[in-house]
Amino acid sequence: MSLEQALQSLFAPESIQNPYPAHAKLRPYGDLLVVPELNSAFALSVDAVNAFFRHPSASANRIGEASPDWPGDGLLQPMMLFHDHASHARLRGLVSMAFTPKAVAETRQFIVELVDELLDRYALEGGDFMTKVAVPFPLQVIARLLGLQEAEQERFRAWADTLLALLDGSTYDPAKASKMSQDVADMRAYFREVADELRQGNRPGVLASMARAEADGERLSADELLANAALLLGAGFETTTNLIAGAVLEFSRHPQAWRQLLEDPSLAANAAEECLRFVTPVQATSRVLRNQAEWKGQTLPEGLNINLMLGAANRDPEKFSNPDRFNLTRPNAERHVAFASGPHYCLGAPLARLEAQIFLERLRQKFPHFSVPKQTLEYRHNFTVRGLKQLEVAMA
Image 1 (cartoon, helix red, strand yellow):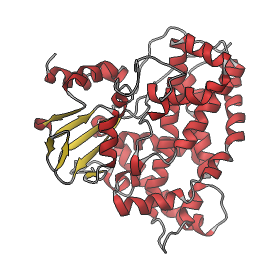
Image 2 (cartoon, rainbow, N blue to C red):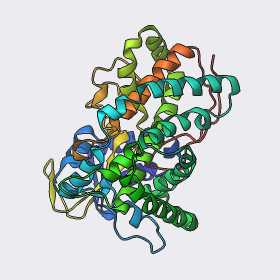
Image 3 (cartoon, one colour):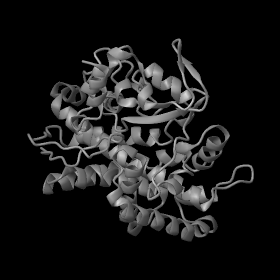
Image 4 (spheres, rainbow, N blue to C red):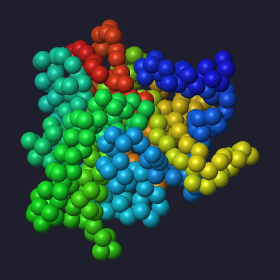
């Protein structure tokens, strides 16, 4: 297969459904594949991905020139996701002051009770596992952590969909620009309205803590509060939704692995790591070179866009033995890059790990004989965040 054909397969519709064959077609061309005519490179290995997450010339500020009707710039630009060095450290520091391990640990009992409630109800009612379990589970957890009122949760759910569409530029639809612009305007109006209230009141939750947090006399502006709260919501909800559904699907496809977990509950933590590696809810992100750089003797030009292919790296045969095997006893499963690495390592990683581990433990105890009936599986049209549209699960 030619390089051109391999690249075409990466962006073919079937790669939404299953991106891993396309990654395998690209791998023979190197672990950092440079395509000058696209001004792009594709990092396919763990080493390459980690190197450019940490490279001093690889900038996270990759919001470039956009269509005049694109509504994302004002929302995305203040996110720490798109900042480097001191600016990133300032934003991350202000957010992380509120997003502490203690706050995450205190949600454990709530998570256990919520999973039990959602699984029991689903066992009685059936239907779409996504809408009845995989979506409400992490949404209610992150909403509680953020301190959102119940009436605010559905509004934030809709906003998260808009955020993810804006983050995945490859699937941006100009026909939806009007609704997305309205969502962004609504988000901005909401946060400007509540920012002072959050700072002055005693409302619990990370959102209020973020609003009140100060470091070296600085605090988050209303736009920074909006952007980074939206980031926490999207990262803390949508990605975990896709992880949970993906884990259920993979265990149904690998019954031997499920039997292992049934027989040895101590595997739950490593099973969560293997699910993160194997499912990889966020398949890719990117960086842009602000200066010329080198990679294995190859000169990379300033301005080159580097696509960090997290899904491909998590199947790197140089790092993971038999990488296409779903293996709960994999000794280095936690070496995956599902949470990125370096300065931008995911703040929500401890929460996602806790949610995944508790979910597997409760599913194991309550419904050890669950199954996924034969059905047509369809993934949402998003090359960055990979997730099922619907899933039917039989609880027993």
